Amino acid sequence: MSDTQLHTYEVFHQSKSGEPHVHVGAVHASDAALALQYARDQFARRLPCTSLWVVPSDQITATSQAESAAWFDSSTDKSYREASGFPMRDIVKRAENWQENDQLTG
Amino acid sequence: MNNLPLIARLLTLADDELILGQRDSEWTGHAPLLEEDIAFSNIAQDELGHALLWYTILHEHCDQPHPDRLAFWRAAPEFRNATLVELPSGDWAFTLVRQYLFDEYEKARNAALAQCGYPPIVEAVGKITREEIYHLLHSQGWIVRLGDATEESHRRMQAALDQLWPHALGLFEPIQGDAEFSAQLNLIKIAWLDAITPTLAQATLIIPPDTRPVFGGRRGEHTDHLTTLLDEMQKVARTESPDAVW
Image (cartoon, rainbow over all chains, first blue to last red; front, side, top):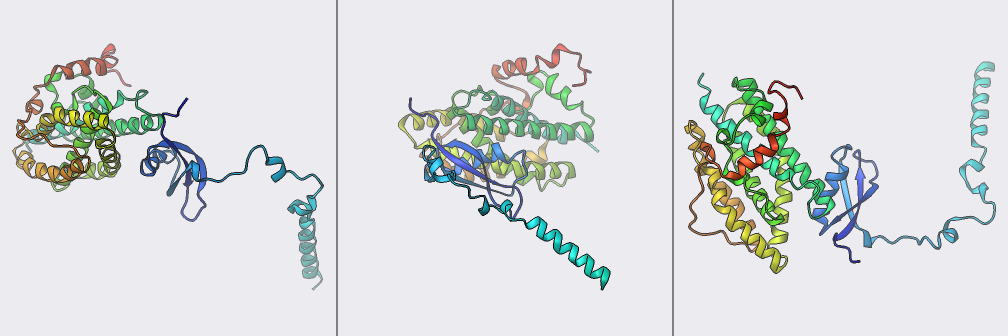
């Protein structure tokens, strides 16, 4: 069945000046100007908004679902790469203690 | 102070918005695509909101009944809207051409009202103008898109313009009892023509020549379509007493 609903545009919404534009959904429209109007009606009337982007959906290059395992799943343990793999909290805690001790003794 | 000219003027402003808002709301659930359904329903709501602003001034500053009472308990001959806004919505082309002609009228009229020196009206114009900028962006965009998109869309748009034109000219019917504002209607009409002419030309639509305007709306002389519209719009309110609080 052919799509009678024209093109789709991905909508990116900025809630505060300086914040990143965040993907919030998509709209159907005949062209970008109308897509912006529809995006405004659907995503900016109730949420605070400072700026909207629309991007033709077919202009987005995406990874494929079928290959997502190859792209994103680790087959071996690489937890040492993750932030949580570092005992930062302990190090910071120890540094704080040293500082306190220095102040007490100094 | 003699409020009669003010009441006459405000009623035309309010009734235009109420009846157009009601007509526009008929598209809720029926617009050509979901996004447009939402966009156009928003516009319908905006128009009703503007009607409420005008009715509220009538109520609070001119000793007129409550807005609900004015909207739901008057009969067709008491309404002062132009016949343009009461005509059945027809197809999407008809709806958009009407909306566009009205949006441009409202813009030109608001510019004049902003200078009228009556604070409640000047303040209301300020509130309305921001939403009207968006309405105009929307309706003008559609006019240009559909005017020369396909043979069918062009045919439908031109047919709509031909049918609507005499009623659109009726927007400039002098308002009985309000000589001051009526005197400005000619200038408003010139500004309106200046605005719509290039857009309609861009849309390859031709303004019907030598048209006699349909007057009467501003005196309470309406088409039967208004009675039908009011029957439906007022039905729920009239199941209760006029003093019911909603």
